[in-house]
Each structure stands twice: as structure tokens, then as C-alpha cells.
Amino acid sequence: MTPTGVSRRRVDEVLARETGRFAELRPRGTRLLHDARRSMPLGVPMNWMSSAYEHPPVFVDAGSGASFTDVDGNSYVDFNLADTSMFTGYGVPRLVRVAAERVAAGSQFLLPTEDAIEVSEQLAGRFGLPKWQYTSSATQANSEAIRVARTVTGRNDVVMFDGKYHGHADELLAEAGGDGVKPLGRGVPRDATRHVRIVPYNDLEALERALADGEVACVLAEAAITNCGVVMPADGFHTGLRELVSEAGSLLVLDETHTLVAGPGGLTGRWGLDPDVLVAGKSASGGIPLGCYGMKDEVAAVLDDPSLAWDQGVATGGTLFGNALSMAAARVTLAEVLTDDAYESAAALGARLADGIESAARAHGLEWRAHRLFNRSGYTHAPELPGNAEEARATFDTDVYNLQRLYMANRGVWDAMDSAGPACGIQHSDADVDRYLEVLDAFLAEVAG
Image (cartoon, rainbow, N blue to C red; front, top):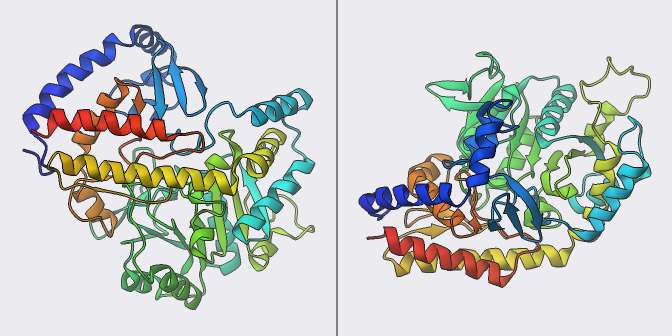
């Protein structure tokens, strides 16, 4: 038996069978992957499309609603949502029309369009931060937010929490290692993390120590850790976080990229949080590339000096940032798609999914817990939910979950990546959740032994 209560012998047997079935169901996709390796490493245009899964990637043909279809005609109810970036679902008619009209009229000018004003006012209303800037991804938005914080404070160092994910820029790829912090991944300079400090989530005493020398420009945090399943903030954590950051003369930067799907104002709105800077992206533009960050007036002031030439101010900007297509897509998505009712419907489905996961586990004698974060769920293969990233990693069996993903894919359910957890979007239905739980029950019946 594995520590999760699952039969290791059955895991190995089911893995062998399902791996063969995966290939049998996707002959054209297998050929395309082979041919693609002539011109792309691993046969994909971006490494994650291969490395995010233990099984081969599928080549997608089209998506509609809460589902997509691969080139072999296999259809999948999507609970990964492209890592939440497709929370809106596929083929939203109004967004399709607006995007097509904007492309026809010009998608990029390196100049502002009127849509950018409306998007900024929408975001200001949702998050309570008055000034906004735009990039093409949340990674770039986090990088710019750190540069703004360094300019405001005159300091260099950044505190992040163990288990975070803030993007793939050099210093964002930092993890605790040994007695300090080390780069995560090859190709990152060995000294890229010299200004980064990592502390355990929910540990206010460790945070206070990290801030004590007065050299920290900002604390970059998720409102809830979301890249090792979900780690929820302990009671009083956010109040203490805000107080400690303010006392240290640092800025609080909240990264809502993964948690924007929790509600109209993300977790900041749900929980009444008070960041100095807030970063978002992914679902805000219906899957069209966009990153953004909002600021309090006193923070934004360092960007608001018209006398400074582009190379004399804060190091921000990019040719395709804030382009006309991204702004048009974000405007219609925020105004007409990501409504209060849409968020509440997705959250109700997420709660139902979490209840069903725990019920299925109990039915098969497994002491598993399900995460609950509005529309999002996930797995803790243990009786207690984790309080920090170390506990999350210790209570999650990656091998069992990756087999579950494979099993589900072969039965028309696209589960989340192993670092995340299944999430419901605004086009999911009760029937979709029922289908997920039906396949989960069949999987557990095979492996629980």
C-alpha cells in the first residue's frame, strides 16, 4: 500500500493498461507529436505543454463551452481550464465577436485605445486600487511590480513564501534550499536570487525576522498558496501580514493571478485585503494574453512623471503590452462575462465538487481531504489539510494523482495539473461535475484495493 491508502500493485497494473489505451485512442495525435519533434523541442511550442503531464500532450482541435476536442475526436470536460486562464470557457459568443472586430480594425498600435480606460476603471472598481498598468503576462506584471516597489522604497530585497508561483522571471524562480535561497531550474543565474528571501506561509514570526533589517522593498504573496494544491491562510494571517509589512516600511504586493477566479475582486475582494500593489492576468481577458497590476496613488506616483524619458523612469514596458486586442478582450470579459452571478455559480459547483471528492474517498476507505477555494478544489491524500507548503508536499502522492489524470483523460475528463487542482468555470454544469465524480469513483474502485 502507498501512504495514501492506495494499492501500489494496482497502481502499477492500471498505469500499464491506461498508458496503452492512451496511445490507442490518439493515433493522429501520436503521429503529429512525432512529426512536430522535427521543428520543436519535445514536439511542442512551449515546454510546459509536455512537461506539465506525465502522459504525452494531446493536440487540440477546438473548444466549446466547458469542453474541448482533440485531433482524434476525443472530447474532454475541462477541469484544468488552461491553469484557470480559461475560466470563461471556450468560444464565448460576445468575446468572439469583439475580438474579431478588433483584429479587423487593427490589433496593435503601440498607442492607447479607449478600451484601456474602461478596463482600468473596471479593475479599479473590483479591487479598490485606482491606477493600473498592463503587460502581456502576469510574470511580467510581477517583475514590474517589484521594480515599482524598489523605486518607491529605495530597497532591493523581496520576500516570498515557500510554495508560491509568481512566474518564470529569473528572481521569481527562487526556492528555499539548504541555509538560504537557490534558483529553481537550469539557465537561471546562480546569483539571481541574491535579493530574495523565502519564508514559510502562515509563519508571521519568520516573516517578522525576514523584514527586521529594513532592506525589504516588498513582500510578494498570494492570498492563498495555489501551486502545491491549496494552502489557506490561518486565522489572523492577513491582518498580521499587512501590519508587519507596513511597520517595516515595505510594500505589500498580492498576486491574484490564480485566485482571480474566486470572485469579482479575487480573494482581495472576498476577504477585504489591503495590498499596495495587486497583480492579475489569465482569466481577465478570456484567455487572450494579458497581465496587469494596480497600485495605490502614492505608489503609482513614481510612474506618473511626464518629464522623465522612457529610459530614465522605472524599468517597465514592452512593445505588445496593453495592445488593442488585449484591451478589447478584457473590456468585454470584465463587463459582460465575469459577472457576479457567474462567479457565484462557479463557486457553488466548486463546493459541490469538493464534497463529492471527499465522499468518493470515504466510500473507498480513503482518508483524503479536498481543498475548498470557491470554484477550485483539489486533493490532500491525508486526513488533515496542510498549513504550509512543506505539509502540502508531504501529504500529496504525485504518482497516484498523475495516474488519476491519465485514467480520467481516457474517459473524457481533463483533470488539473498535479501542482493545482480541479476547478469549475462559468460554463460548467452540474452534469459536468457529476461526470468528474463518476470517473473518480471508478478510478478509486480500481486502485483502492
